[in-house]
Length: 387
Image (cartoon, rainbow, N blue to C red; front, top):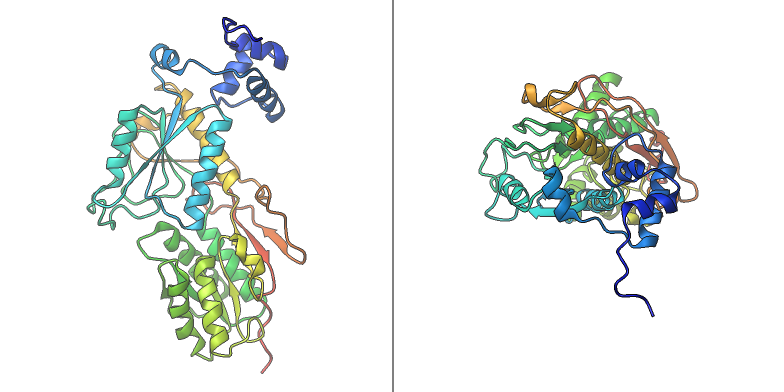
């Protein structure tokens, strides 16, 4: 029978089982950099095996930290934002942080969510709210200024976002729009039409910007964009407009859900995909490979994006005021200068037969460095039909 009086395991026990120093255990559990992935996994495995739990209350009193990361979110059920939220929680726990979410629902703004997180006690905040705060009626059209001495991470530049410790990183929507458009132009299409997301979403504006830049670089004409609201119904409405125009031979749609609607509208109008019209989506939702035809799309590695962002947050938490690189002197968001890494398929999401990925590694000057999306080519794109 187990001894009920047996002492709980300590960090010293974890270090002994993992074969590392107690300092290394501390670094791993604090999410500090400069620890190899093999050592990190060995320490976390030892902690799990022993059932080790840190005394977070005592730690908070001693260090003035809570070892908790908060996320301010609108609680979107869309594939991209929800996948990133799940990845953030998984990665936070991997580096030893608790995870708290505050939702900016009806009648409340992003700042209300931030204030709620600060009241709970957090060491850093992720602003995953994808809506421009200056255009958001929920936020009252107020500039988003984080006046708190904790690091704040945003996965894309948000107009009005400012504070003493703001870091901007993430995958580039501009690059995604560029990749999709360049793929279609490279197949020989004279130009590419676009079904955009809502303009007040920075993600939608980024993807539209990439589309425009690719057209301009190729000297292709820029057709008028259709605007949707991320749903299949809005994609269907836009698709009906496009299907009625015989000049349309290639369409970049800002997300896969809207692309489903576009495919339905084209089919109803008798415009065969890809024989008459090629379609590229964005996100690589689980259903994308099983549509008819399977959808060419842009995939984002949300696990890698979350891991990269939280590594930056952990480093900012450890950074002391006045250290080189400390952004508090300027009060302006600091852009990540980390090099981009090749994007790989998400865990548990193998590449389907016949699809190929085309990663892009560069970031444009002035854009936050991050993890590039990559093109997954399936059977919804082809060269234009010969006259």
